[in-house]
Length: 43
Image (cartoon, rainbow, N blue to C red; front, side, top):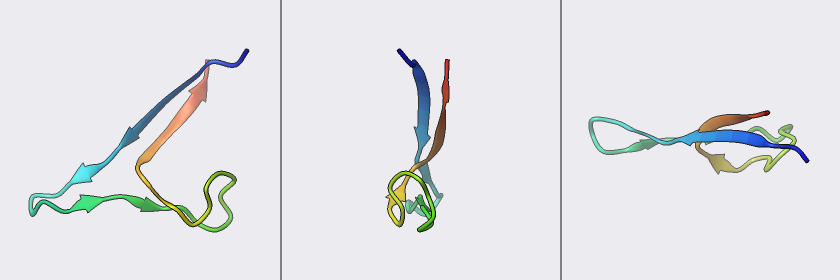
């Protein structure tokens, strides 16, 4: 069984707006979607 450790981050600016990433259309998972910054590793 794979164990995956992941993290996601949403950044808030001083003006109160949020910074997220837009995944490109070539992404393996959820292409074209808005998502938090982050990633994961297999343990």
